[in-house]
Image (cartoon, rainbow, N blue to C red):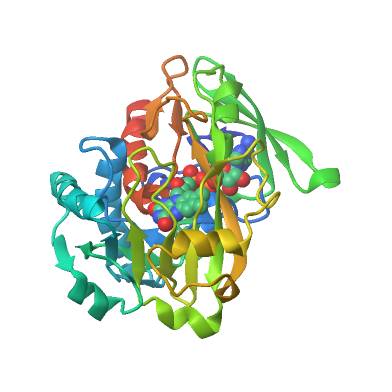
Length: 375
Ligand SMILES: Cc1cc2nc3c(=O)[nH]c(=O)nc-3n(C[C@H](O)[C@H](O)[C@H](O)COP(=O)(O)OP(=O)(O)OC[C@H]3O[C@@H](n4cnc5c(N)ncnc54)[C@H](O)[C@@H]3O)c2cc1C
């Protein structure tokens, strides 16, 4: 590998969606993923929800890309046989105060362009989710679920069919901006057998997820730092999966790190409980000091009073790539931009939820930025 029109660093859902759109238009597109397969990090350690765009600040990149990504993801899944289902979701108010907040949530959803939102009463909650306790709920019809690993693989497969070179076990270790290209140094192969190769890239897309700050720093950009926030899941034991029919969320907490522990019925008929949210010190810390099932039972009982610790088993966890430090302030939105000092580089940072949903729309924005560089 010597010359590249574009090198994409990171083979998560975002990198693979970007590879698909770029390889439609340009040849010599390379996607470099350090792991043995694409999609092994956040892109397969999530809730698999096709979000609607309900919560995000109107006008933000999260709002725009979530709404457009929702439409594009359904379209893509239908066209390429990726397992998915438009289930709808309920955001449930349990107290009079929360019930008063439902109207605001409805308004903010409408301001973001969501259609079909409806506030439903206790009786309708009971018809849809007989085991859930709530005074009222916001019904969101455009939310759904997708097999996230299959989605990533489908983006990557189509990119490869269009001629993109997808390399796994390929870790970018150094980037050197020059006048007409960026020199990319790559460790290729498994640990002891790895060799070093270089490429000259007319454009580089940093889609390295949790490590995007470190990749940005290779280009001299030290403005950003990513803080890993772990989300842990439990699963209902099979015999109790009848307790949840679709997707059930609590009211969002204004300063919360996440949407709150919720229930997600998956395409396989299992029910996820979670994810929780807590800052961890290391970007590979998925398992240390996992919360016990009792804690999930405590958190989940508010919506599902009959939930007991014995109904739960620990499941996987994932790490969010947050730009906001613990207890502090920082960019709450996605960062998607050409680097101010290295204009041949496109930086994607803080691509946390709803990144799975937003990926095809983010990819379209990246396409426009690449066009400025290459055309
Ligand atoms: C617990 C949790 C629940 C979530 N739930 C949802 C949800 O329901 N719906 C939704 O829309 N979103 C959800 N998200 C968000 C979504 O999963 C992410 O936004 C999305 O997966 C980010 O994709 P990515 O490609 O940016 O990152 P990643 O999937 O992390 O991919 C980045 C890739 O870059 C590679 N890489 C890093 N450094 C290098 C290097 N130097 N060289 C080569 N490769 C490198 C990594 O190995 C990795 O594979 C959730 C996230 C979490 C953590």
